[in-house]
Image (cartoon, rainbow, N blue to C red):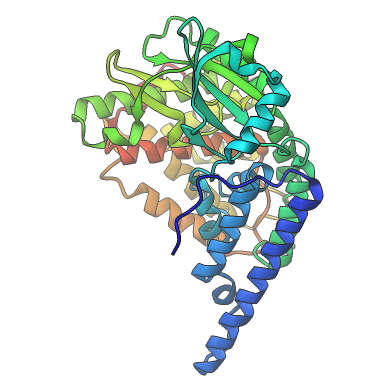
Length: 437
């Protein structure tokens, strides 16, 4: 196998992006036919899921969505919600491949973007600009730069065509998923798709992200546990975000540090989530591990990427407070009423389906009820939640979109749980929650 290229051009036109999706659909269909023929040759009756979800097909879908980046890649991440189990297993397998970094764009395409946003003489403002990206993701890639006065900056550059093609990308990917049979006709994702478009338009506005960064810094105030980059609006445009460069090691690299340090980091993150829900009513909803770093010198958590930040209403915040109170006290009828007010149940949910949802919510609240430090590393909670989630996912009569705000909040909570488990951390969640209930 040849070496992977350092960069690939991002299709920037609407029709070129649609063509790439067409290539993917044709390739996947061909893969299904080939797998069906192999099963027939073995004397087996072909099964749709097995024909669709071959390793080769999963790779084709993931590679094409990664090549398109932007909305095509992000809508997959939104549906998979970083560990959410309320979608078909086959689709989860494909979408989980989109959580890693995208392939970066080549230098020629990067320079075209910089010239357009900053003018052709932009290099005169820098002592050094690294054309090799320090990171690449779904919307853009990050470069290191040093200004003439010696300031080190992180320059996030948006992929061309991402913003302009958001709506059509979302619609095209949704249509592909629907036509493939991975999503049943009973699963109404219109609200999710509408929200995906709004969220992606917001994330693609780097000036707005800079404002969120500034606002979030203000909300944290003098909290010394966290460190955020400083926004440089004089160099920022709708497609370029300039921030101070903040050193730090990856959060996963701390898995072998002392238990005390791992516990403290996880406790800080859970405390921050509670502040977001109940104090700030502003939540950074993307829990990707890459959005957290650790600065050893000052023992601070570095928070990155505020494009997915969103406000939540006071009513929504209060409903979750009630849900937590009822879960901790064991008041199941009141917990059901709180979940119903949030929107977990529609009019067609059966008693059995409602019971499965309640079990899932009770499991999610298990760390809140635990006395003392909850050991996320030793807990089988993820396995139990996965089993309960699969029971719902396999019930094709149940699939419906949960409330959008809860979907984003679950994404954040699930990511924080997963990070605590990765660190094998022990956290007294009940003590943290007590001040809010």
